[in-house]
Image 1 (cartoon, rainbow, N blue to C red):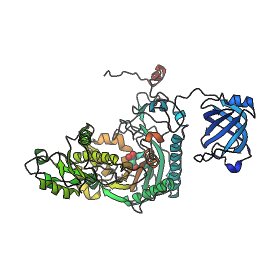
Image 2: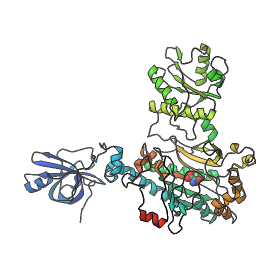
Image 3: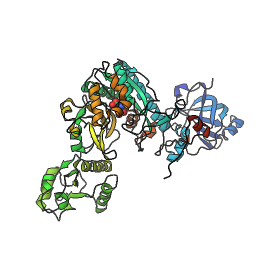
Image 4: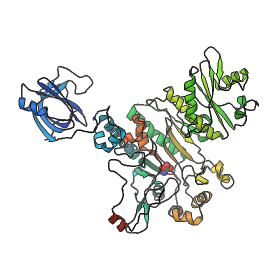
Length: 587
Ligand code: ASP
């Protein structure tokens, strides 16, 4: 037997036992005639002792152990005189009588400890060493637990797990596809699924009734901290359901996960907020409800006085009341102004009003307004003495609200109000069915083209498509979109109509989605579904800043796997087989 116990298992009650352990050398300390080694495996750390007085040769061997050597030891469990209360195994040590080096290690490029000295790139290049760190491993263990809980929950609710193909056809509606050349069909390409959307709908037509899959999805988009080119969705679809059936069931699933993983009870019923309300109150379709500072519109107080043209010309003037920050210094306010003017945010400037504790009022616009106006504003904003009011304005209401949202989140961060151990979940409903794309110069689906328009708005499809609401819903937690889905169209006529509104010719719609439109002609049941982003869900549960930390082998911000050095060029022979020639456009 390689080992009789793991390194996390032995306790005082095991004292006197002869045991065998195997693991990695975390640390060695020589103290006179004694050498102590911390032996680590997935389960924990056990202290080993080598005593010169007992076995000089073994002692000598131990002094040659380097960090990350993989070893096996036999010995006797002994009560420690110097107990370590922070370690579950801290009351015992193993007095070693036999040592076997299974595998030596060169010096690792960074320390294998929670507080490592390794930078991001180095840790990714040697991810297998990074994964030896317990803080990283724990995230993957949590991910595993969540996946098991999800599978069991869905199984108990009659869902069938079905694998859908990874090599499918390209449907360039939505994000960019990753494509794979086909050797057997020269000049033709598969695409990797952005999600199993159409396939799961076909499973409903096939009568599967309830489907799920822990599905790998691929999107060729620019990356951010919460995006990876490949990611995992908990992908689900159900037949014969209405919006609230889906919402209730998956709310129960979320409740179950929060309870089991974090011991947190979500409210018995989660709030459902319309998209329009979320935009108005928080400037976001994924509001962070862990803190207040809701937007308050101040058009009636500040617009139209003829004294300040910036506000007089604005389509939106609104602000937030930041509690207790009237003492912000010039420098801090300048920093905030720079913050909102950053290109990613794009505001033209920031107006502040400080309502000091002693009742004095100071503002960046005090020369434009009479003192009564600031008092009216104080009432409107619900400000108290000691508060700071921050105001943005602009000629496009929603764009300004989005800028104000960034400022609100920034203030939430500064005031420490975005507590990772607090969870505020809600559903956002009634999304607009379409949104205008500046890049494409046309309407695009907000969710995807299979989403059912709100029946009350269908008559607007031709004249005012931008006013049509979707039967779509997102699950939002702490300002992050964790999941989203919709009722689906199950009528081939309506589906064709949707493609028409999206600017598809009938030929193009049939070429790309004919399989689905045809399938709808064979008794398609009403159906709906949603998908949760597993990586995001795990990272919220684990309180991580980036989804990368809960992915075993993630890609960096340029979409590279630095460990595998992928993507890479193809061997000429492979290109030849594929009958492909590379002719890169020079920049
Ligand atoms: N397929 C959708 C997505 O990936 C989710 C859904 O509608 O079920 O966003």
